[in-house]
Structures are given as C-alpha cells and as structure tokens.
Length: 115
Length: 114
Image (tube, rainbow over all chains, first blue to last red; front, top):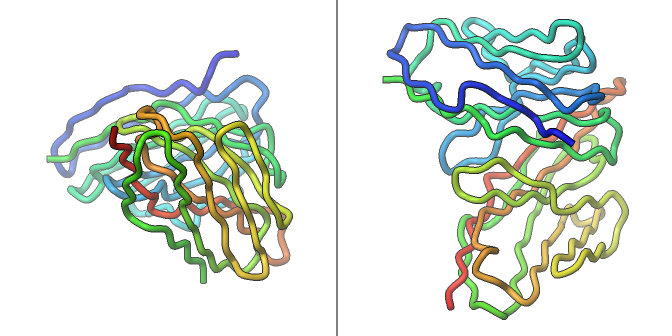
C-alpha cells in the first residue's frame, strides 16, 4: 500500500514570497489533515478535511494560509505572503475516517525555511 | 481549554525499561494516541487507548486512566533504535458536533545509551 505523498520535500523562500505544498493521501482515506511542526514542538493541526469539506480550520491563519482539497483526494496548502515564523515542517496525514479508532498515517513532510 | 503535558527529555539504558508519562486536559476526551518520531522523519503510530487500562503490543505498552487524565507509554528491552521523540496525542470531540480533532503534546525526546 502506497503511503501519503508530499512535495516538495524542502523549500527555501524569502519572507513575503508565496509557497504551495501538495499532498496525495492514501487511496480511500476520507480524512486529510495538514499540520505545522515547529522544531522541538509537537504537530499543530492547521486544517482537517472530510472528503472535500472542511471539518476544522480553527488554527489556520486565514489571512495568509489557505488550503483546498479538490474532488476529495489531493490537497494543496498555500502560504501567501510567508513570514519568518512560518519556518517549520508541514506534515500531511490521512485516515480512513474521523472515527475514534482511526489512526493517522503521516507523509514525509515538507521542510520550509523562510529567510 | 486543551492542554497536554509530557517531559521534554528522558535518558535510559539499552536493555532497560522506561516509562513516559502524559497528562492531559480536554473538554471532550475521545481517545489517546502515542506516536514515535525519529529525527527528521514523520510520526508513526504506536498505540491507541480509549478505555481505561493497559494495551500491550510487543515491547511497547500504553496505559490510560480517564478519571486522572493520565497515560503512560512503557518501553521494555530498550534498543538503540528506540532513540526518538514520543508524542502523546489526544482526540478531542467538539460539543454539539460529530467533528473531532487530534491535539499533540510537544513530545518527549528519549535518548538510549549503551
């Protein structure tokens, strides 16, 4: 079974520039998550999709971050414009559903450095 | 509010046993996960508890006490490859909604010495 795919793996941009990340979840997984993980901290949920609908985006900085999940499969996360504090690893995860026992499978992450 | 606490760092000896504790406060507890994360890699699932008690899976066991808001991960027969961060994560169900989200602690960095 193929895992969660993400690209790019690494990205370096200057502040105020824009950047986009792509995620392809495990086939058949209805729930998709984007997390931000700052060095030394645990992952922080940015947005959660159930199929192509948003379940939770309460911690997404909506003035600069946006995400979409077209057709309930692939997803993109965009930052525009980037700030220095956005430097982090952006993890995409998917699960069969959002039921209580469904474990999340994480992709390898995209390491973003904003200079 | 939501809060998850776990020790920042721990050190243990190869072949020994180590217990990593996690305490949490959530409004709608609906399960607790433990994940392992090696440096520079993504988290991988270790265990899930929703009822009180001990869940054993090979060298790893996880315990939950809902009344105390407490869990621990027990690692036996430690190996060098167990050096990693261990993340405690709680599923929190929103009131008046079927939606739930997973909240992660900051992780415990475990170092294994020979």
